[in-house]
Image (cartoon, rainbow over all chains, first blue to last red; front, side, top):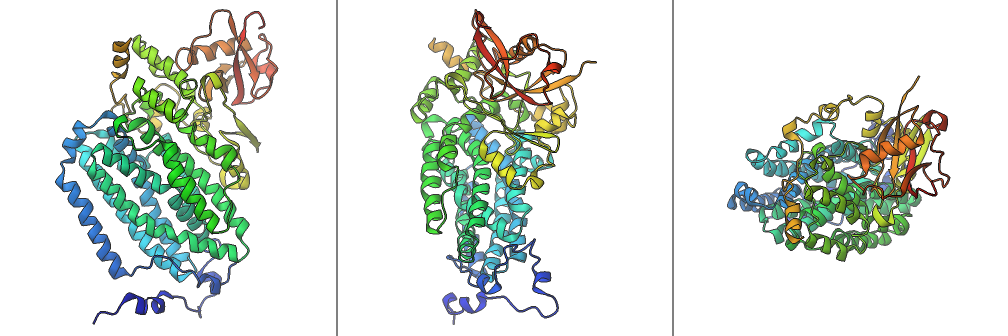
Length: 494
Length: 91
């Protein structure tokens, strides 16, 4: 006779005991577990909305894997890739280099929450989260591996995190900050609530929609199956925040969300924003980044915050909303021009039709970002190829590790928010990045970003210095995904 | 003895800051021209005829004298400077 889960789950959910041979603080050191001093009795009220047993977990996950891997097997990915639009190739190359190692990092983050979470329900859910992230790493590496025979870029799925490539450095800085160097409670708020609930829908659901429209059903299925796990384990955040708020830690919870939401936004703005608005072939774009953010982030995330009794982050109206319309456009310029510092082959994505779409979705684009592209386009059309590779390096923001950018062209506005501390000058692309640094200078001040390393000589001088530092042989450096042919259409129109 | 300076260069019309290497003995006129060589025609158009490039500290309105040297300006490493287009008659 099978016993229903509901009959026994409540009994076995609670795995706490009163330690007899060690103190509670020895069992759960506050700096690793809970520095907020919340009583164990409160942690034991942690109640996860979606309950799952290990038996059901294994069954469900196996069914998901059968679905995802069978779709992959049904379609020859290599042939599909060879015939893909250069923009779609850039999406895949960028994704598989940038994302899998973050999933792998989350394995250890969840494992720490499993060990050091004081709430039994929290530990249970984090156990499954650990397994989920192993799955996400494996499935994405496996999908990427198939392309190795046709494109060297996918080697960076495994190689990337073992380098000091500037993109990888930026990602490490962000995710080390929010999930690898904090106690279990703080990590869970930042990872599960701000990062996973706030943003993973962008990369995994919204991008999946574009993938389906493009006809890449295998990639779409992979993304959706990954996100189905996220929907379950990201729920760790909400009951946790309820406990914090109930125990007088509302202000702390708010600050953790304010910090981590912005940090992760910057990563996703560049990663997802460029994929949606420049790389996905025009005819197959579901929505713009702005529209996806409106649906998946602004609407849903703010609703979740409100339900928990929290406020939208202090910077929402003045800095976040304008940033949605500008930041990734500026980043795309640099990512294209400095393409040889990336492992993927970027495309410009600024044909006349694409510019028309960009102007429609982001009114004023042609008078701002379009002005830089006018110069680049004219150089290409006139055969001034030497001007398509800059001879000057960008300044990186001391927090994001991405280029410190603003708005170019007719409405030029680029602001450097600086901070002088202990004999060093730090440069930030927004007041929010500076504010994050100021919340805990000791955490950030000893880090040397890519610009710092260029200026202080850590990166060797000379034309090959940067590439040697990033361990990029000439064959591994990005080139124009369209082999510079994108201006030919413009010449024909002229 | 001259020294190499790295400045954070905010060139008018560009989309972001750039690391500009200059010499401590360079004048502001030379700093602006070094910036132009790297940035104009690559990220932004070349200056129009009758337009001069001037340097100012980032966030300030006052233009620095063309003959002022980097070493005299009191810049620190990665000091942020704006490179601004002004009509030559006004420059």
